[in-house]
Image (cartoon, helix red, strand yellow):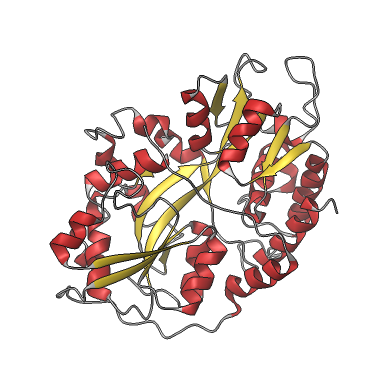
Length: 394
């Protein structure tokens, strides 16, 4: 399989904290338009905010092009603005001027709450029924029974490890969270990495959910003060072990090859690249499970090109696009039928990308103060500031 570059970049300056806090939801929302009732003639263009590699027209590799045919068929020119973080996507949608966004779960509900996206009339998307039933009504895009988008792709965060150090796959995330002697007789100190985005606090909470059940963590994205404090304590301890907080996929690949890293949270992208170079690297979803991301194509509340947008949302669900994108990005299709018969993905590609791990994934969503816990939960802006402090050794 061939795959492209990836997802979330860090934001660690004080100015960035302010920007993220603003993006989180303090902006007054625009009035949401009523859902379209009939798809008419395209307006000639559709403007999309997307992750890098999500909207390809063959410029990077001629084999990967799901834009050119759509433009010829519909007359809708596809204009893409790439965004490197969920927070950047929220900020761009707040500014306006776009029709669609491929939002991850840690952005989608912010967009709904801020009234930046509108309800989608799925009756106008004939292929919606082909979507994996587990995604059709997922809580990161379905609110009060209303659909606010169309599932696009999904994936998960794996534990990558060096097979010369671990003769058998590590069974727990403990190897990156707590100091210990690894199977080669050496400490893990200075030999592990962690992701440098605030959403990584959920990875710590997921681990604590299993190893400290007395904390009562039910949802790693909904933490009361005591649970949140425990997650931060774990991450401060991890700070002493981490050689680098990664966000650059290619840099992490180099660290596994040349800098002595033997275990880290990662994506299938890096693992596949390393295996392609015959490096002794494999991945596993440990006993505690894993966090992950499921991306949804959402329609701006004030979209200027709604007809082209609906035509694109339907197009986004065709089997070839879904399979080609999964091969390119190292993700999983939202349409299960795309896992078979695609020359680029191959019939084993979905299994390689983790399609069988769906039920063990805690998908990204934005932490909010409002939650099921009567004590309330810690909101995302505190995740941002506290994680930046941890990265700084505080």
